[in-house]
Length: 81
Length: 154
Image 1 (tube, chains in turn yellow, orange):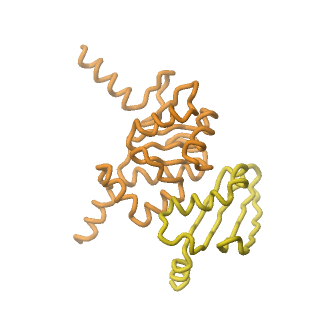
Image 2: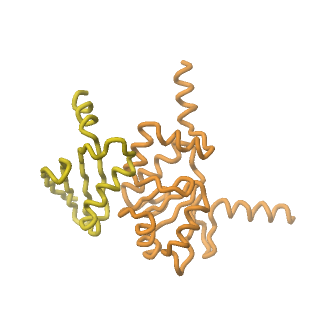
Image 3: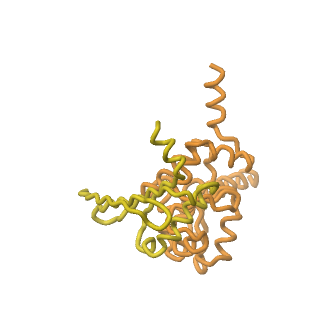
């Protein structure tokens, strides 16, 4: 199965995000990495719902979607490892 | 005679024998046709069993990588008898559960009638130990606890 990768990053409202798309022939699968202070104190499900709300329109056309959500502090700790 | 017939019926129920006929495998349920996507019906489904999963495919033949991940994780915590609904069998169910959960993708996992999340949330909960704790609240003892105990005692 041939795949192509597109990678883009940018600042979007209150967070930085990286959006990768993997486009095999028949299924589009997306993975989002979001770092935001707005995730502070929020459990996983709530974080993911925040992202889902922001991408509500896009998600109507997506069948497979993964996300990783970190606060800036968590991201800094991860980068130190 | 009646005792053995009763045991056979119980075994078929345990193996999720559907009203439509055919052995579907352990835990696989068929959402009833007609109104299967309605919030009333879905409310009933998620409350019927302690662990409920909406999948693409079945545990024996998952039809997507994320659904496969979910069915690989659950037995690691000794969850083998759980309710599974194959959304590929029922477009109404597939659309309905997305609206009911307010969640755009399948698979979807419910524990004790509460929506937990999809594959990536379940995977993170499995990796960070949260899933063990959530299952404890349901009275399900994860086998990972016993494995950890064995490792600690060595």
